[in-house]
Length: 109
Image (tube, rainbow, N blue to C red; front, side, top):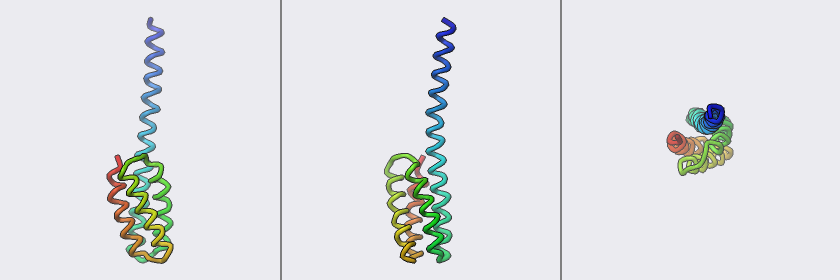
């Protein structure tokens, strides 16, 4: 009987750890997306469209791994817009998209 309880406790502990690890990973990707989006905004405001693109691309990779939901979807859409505008040399337009992305990505839990 005690052995069965020990096995059950071990299994439950392993499952808890695995589930917790997934949510930690999601939070980590969301946090990384937010950090790089902030960097993109800062460089965009300084007129550095090329650096805005680099940070927005990294933010986009993290955002796509941050889970599912409307805020992630909106964040991804605006990061893609920031990248497109930045590649055209439009730092102002890229910054506006990055700011919108930040609003949404900041809401990802």
